[in-house]
Length: 320
Image (tube, rainbow, N blue to C red; front, side, top):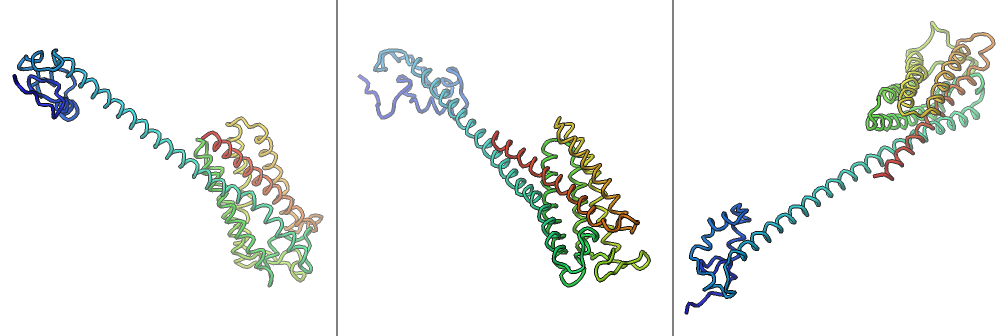
């Protein structure tokens, strides 16, 4: 009587082919059916399974069960790892989106702060400068003199904050598939504000010390100041037009109306401001007042838009 080796579990006793050899044929050699496994392993060649198999039956079913088990395990393995890979990719995308909105929200907050900060600055400086009238004199005149650095700093700080706000608007409009030109124009407006801070204006309407610079006597710094300032006041109506189209596309009727009214109001009040600073009789004494109204219209719109898009980002975060 022949002694059967039991050190390894056989799939085929007559040919002494182990289950491990059958599994190896499937996993490493690419066999996916009985014919391939038999060819690669040499199983079931002697046809003595009923004699040598302790179970007293053909080894065919044992080999088939080993093949099926191995293939099922491979499928489960692939599906598990595929699911993990997809889940990991989704998590990475989610984290990227979250970080995108965190950075964007910080920039939007800078847009919320900028307008009120600028307003607070000229309110305090204008109330403490001797001979300065907030009704008559331009805000830029606060840059003149020993304390002028406070207004210059305000121009630069607020300009930097608003530039971050413009970047946030560019990110949001681009991510929503709408025109980014409105945000780009706001960035140009901000460059104008920063430029106005870098170049000090000439004395105007009697400040300081009753001085007024005639057109032919203007300094290069004063000319550049006015040129950069024009970017802000002339650029905003164009930005308002672009954002009106964006709000119309998104069917946000309230924002469409507000943006249109804001743009038209700024143009009208800016014309009156220019008349006052141009020394037109009847408007000179109120040039400063109308300039402040013009800027308040602008700052209110930017602040509210920043709050609006901040809420949009919050809504997106809750859905991610």
